[in-house]
Length: 135
Image 1 (cartoon, rainbow, N blue to C red):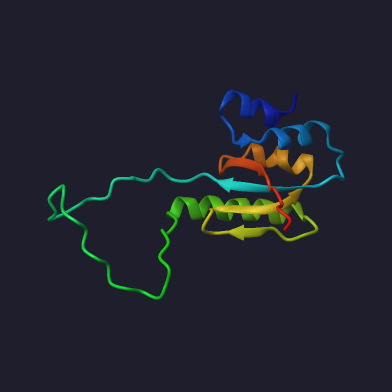
Image 2: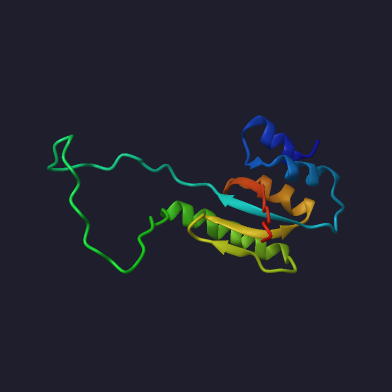
């Protein structure tokens, strides 16, 4: 059993999909697998304060904006994502990784050795198979 699998089994490291675990165990060193590397998220509060509203009152409409709203990632999430990006750069992988800011993740094609190395990082919460859907 490799170190990344041991981390996953003990709950101390990032979660690995079964397909990714199998690839790490049996994949050739030159083989590559497209994976999604998720950054550890900071602790966020899910309760938003409500001021000046009674419990049964309807919420007031928000002003219309042409820009879609999305939650801003926390500074620690950005730090984690940046550190993962640096690690991926250091690997020198043939295809550049794709940064997914809204998902706080990267998509990259990695070797078993590179996945094992990322699995020991304190910045990574999960490494999942990048499932491709064809239409």
